[in-house]
Length: 299
Length: 299
Image (tube, rainbow over all chains, first blue to last red; front, side):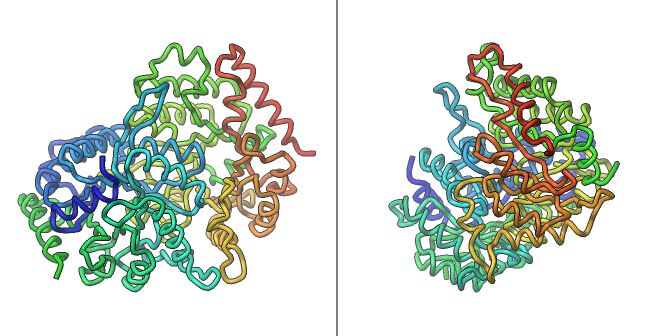
């Protein structure tokens, strides 16, 4: 298997766009036809509806985008059955040869971090066997616990040619409460960004990017521009496009001149661009994907 | 149901000790008798072994300690079946009327945070029903994303009389990389601690403590003492006792004069105080629990 950064670059090249399709299923937003054939009083049935919807979205537009990012929270909210739905979606993505990011924002120390990481990537080692769990290409992680807490994620990722995306500057309105605190003359998120750039530099692929990415919200274009300059070898995962307010012009600051360097996520904007009663929801999803691809086309 | 802080205080009073029993199952540490009756090549069987072991630990010592804290990572590492094991353990804790903390260190924004929180606490609301998922009394959360990202956790917790424990100063050796950065004249963890104290002050129970706790490692006794003074109304969850190096004298700095204010976690030290081949593992667990209770007895 290729270096994670190279697989990501290849996938973006092949699709000709940097779109990351976020799969964040919510019962109340599902098409009426799917809700009507499931039972809202059973988590098992809701989880099944999430799988049916997610797999249909992949059929509709999955081959047009380079990256798919399921949000663990919505699947976890259905309990064990929800996580089976998540497995089904990740498996279909692998069959379609899409790069997958499990958006779980994990972070813990030592052996606990290893358990999260091995589950996310190649699988957990038990008595000489490797047992796959989520088998995603990348995982989002939280930096607050420091390098030794991130180390098990990096090790597990590198052993299996996967990647991590570290939260640097998140897309929520209140992100600055701690992230913007000035520490030794510059904001905390820049310290985190510098650490990410250093960790990333330890493993650079043929494409010139490394395997430790940064999550930087589209809703902060100035910070995005500064971080792009500070971290030229780092892949960015940019949330906040569309529904959260980030525009195509905003996210362009995250791309390098070669058209690489950033993937731009949209979840609700791509998967729920329809009223729940709209019978034409499938074409709405196709059209929303086309519009986002067009909007982000290199000028 | 009582305010979370009051239930915690009552549980500590009744047991006469502040021990938090961490359940972090690892296949290679399980007693030989449990491993031999399970299949190491199947995640379903490993998950079943985790449930058998965890439930037996609860039978052995669960009624002697006020708080039980399962670590989500080790259950998640077994996939959906692992999470069924987690549910079984949490359910038994409820039957035993123990206070439970789901140690998952979650953190995300807006509706995603709500999904994590509702699942952790009372359940997810769907078309007028509430569907329980983990039904824990408290959840550990990561502060890096800021107040608006923590808000859904606080809201969901308060609606159902539950609590959150925010990471302030973690117990790992490299915790200081970002947590100790000096921001406007004091370390980042003190800024986080101050924010936690403020949020906590919004909802104080009869006992004088609130529903937003702080995770502060036993491995940093000086910081623990300072934070205790800075946050008198905040319940501390103190990891790092025992296997990670924190002593009874270290953690005493986290307790207030009334014997309340902190719960002290041990996971490996209480649940795996035996060699995997030791047939007397059950009495080893009983003895380790007795020793920790004695060591932390008020002087």
